[in-house]
Image (cartoon, rainbow, N blue to C red):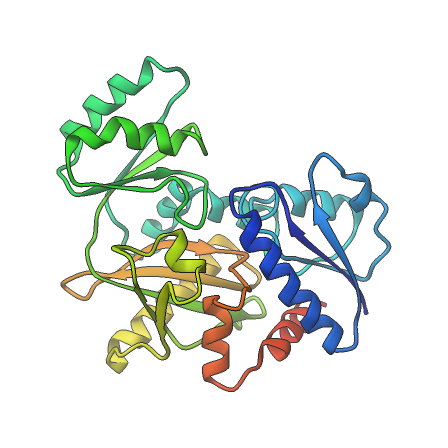
Length: 307
């Protein structure tokens, strides 16, 4: 097939996307496809409008790639693509909306409140509301951002204002969420609509205090244990929640669902990643590898599921 791989982009996750794109391009070429690489920029849409390909493989992360906007453009152009459509992409990117859907489907979530900051004077009002609503520790993060960019764990109320400022650099809507201490696990999901399956659960042990940007992408930044050392009953429950979350949002082909296992071993869902990382240190490929699926075969399966 003739496949265009869109990578790079202009979000805060550009560097990660460059690495994902490189891996995807190499894998597709090894599988015999004719590949066109496009370093995507929403200000240069001519490159997309002029594409003459059988399929687009989206290797972008974050805004203008993972949020449904690009998917809408490709839909209007009649170009098929790998991964979730407009609605599922937008919902997964909007953490607040996604959490409402998870709750409706009885998937445990951390207690949270979403605030909107339209002008500087809003900060003091919101800061006071946060103090009255949450007890430390809690998390402040952008509502629509990935790779923990803009995220702060608040252990002292004096940190609230700077954390709000940090989060609003990415999004005027911020999510304040109860901090859940526990083991971080993630579940890749793969398959046709209605036939999705969960791959082995990965436990993530970050070298830093929490699973931040450096832990995710720096070589040796975290240890991945595949499969996670979790008993069979809990493993099945987490995998069921992951598939249910994928389906509830309307995701297609593949996704990766992140959880925290609290002290009571209740899996608290964090988010669904509709375009999870495909870098050399990424989680989805690690899980696939643990059951004998090579990186190249995994990428090819995404293509086959899409066409």
